[in-house]
Image (tube, rainbow, N blue to C red; front, side, top):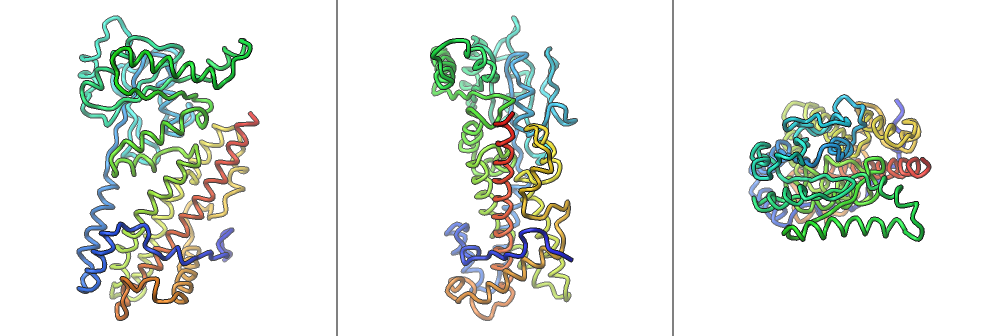
Length: 409
């Protein structure tokens, strides 16, 4: 059976086998566990950490006036076309009468909540936040379009007073730019700066401290402030929720892709350590089969996280108006829905060959002679790291191809 494209190069390097992604305190703890001949405590710690991340919930509240673009913003953040069956309902009239959840299509632990519109004569920020269950959400995004209104400032001030973060998003800036084109000697940069400063000034004038304003367009979600918004949201979450949020983001910019890769790299040593215990299973052949199964599961998650699964590519194709075949053509890692066994076995073999050629200095600080059960650790770590690198490079190529399509359109 032929190997997938790009699988024959076996580009393993010494850096694929190092422990640079392990925190120093975990390295020291692993050393001590190996010396005592008891890895169960470290494995338990790794399993607990992975399980904690797997079950971490993130709830994001999206609020604003009716018709401001809340639903379109939610769909853009989720990487969904408005016509997708999982997409938020986009309508010219207000259709949200109570908080409506929209789980992330690839990570059901992340949920965007479409809150009822603000701006009615009876709207009061304090009662509104109580009605929508204020305490349930991790942070708020206030959506506005066309112009800033006092209700935006009132809500922002109340959210801040109640001790949570909000981010002010001005949607439909592409429409503003189109309208401003009629004016002579007014650049796009000047127009965007004018809109941003107006929002900042009015928020500060209403008593809101250190407001953050982002300008976005649903139709050009990779432009303007969308990448900066996503990075800011990630930066201001705690470490565990940051990990979950980063992996859920659509790959609209190279910095986001790099941060996704780093977040996944940081967890590789935990997966490899857990796999080591399976490798010590007494039934011949069973440990290898289990490792292949678990590796496939990790690799499939990597591919989905970077938007290289079929459903994500279909959505991207619709959003940028590019044939899906053109996007798939730049992908070098396996395109099959289920990564084939022979591909995984090939990568493991390449990693093992390379590991055997390395001098003992690479792992001498931890992997002592006489502990053969630890041999799979560097091999599995390197295999996952190599696949992650390849998938991240594929995602970069797909992003470049998608951006080419958007620029032409």
